[in-house]
Length: 111
Length: 124
Image 1 (cartoon, rainbow over the protein chains, first blue to last red):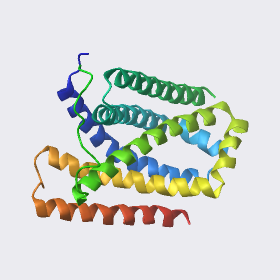
Image 2 (image 1 turned 180 degrees about the horizontal axis):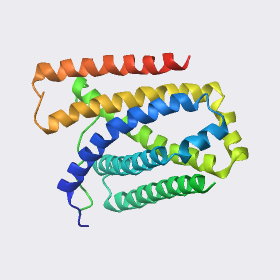
Image 3 (image 1 turned 180 degrees about the vertical axis):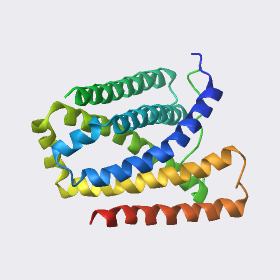
Image 4 (image 1 turned 30 degrees about the vertical axis):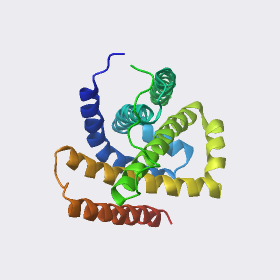
């Protein structure tokens, strides 16, 4: 298994930095979502800026989460085969989440 | 990769000093937030599917259990973010003196609690 751990280490930190402003933005939006009707949420995501920021956040967040979970697995799981299996599951969940988000945003945009 | 790899942090052996506890919680919140990010993807998918599917989310969101989870989620996000910033400084070798490490740790706890309270006060 060939992995460049130095670049993963840097990527984990770069994604963390990008996530800081996006997290504040999303928490702020979540507060307003609470009082929004379904139509207003749709209207929110029909804005290119909002959907763009959301997709960037989801992508960077999923990469950050994937790298973090993989590190934890590598630290606490001894069996190499089990690590491999868990990594496949993590990759699958990451990819599915990204596809769901992308599909949803494109679909809302078309509506 | 060999099969009997050495495990990195031995949780049960070391004394639970503040820095270690902070690190463990960074990982626990990291896993919880990862699950949360998948839930956000499912949420936006429900939004896209239509109002009848979104209603399903709204019913869950109205429950007190959901609110409690959301509260801990806020707490987890702020903790992970502030502590993460601390680790970013450490990556540059900054703020690693023993006294600074403890003081920045207390600062993170304070910021986390204050930010969480601030967000929830905006909602009520």
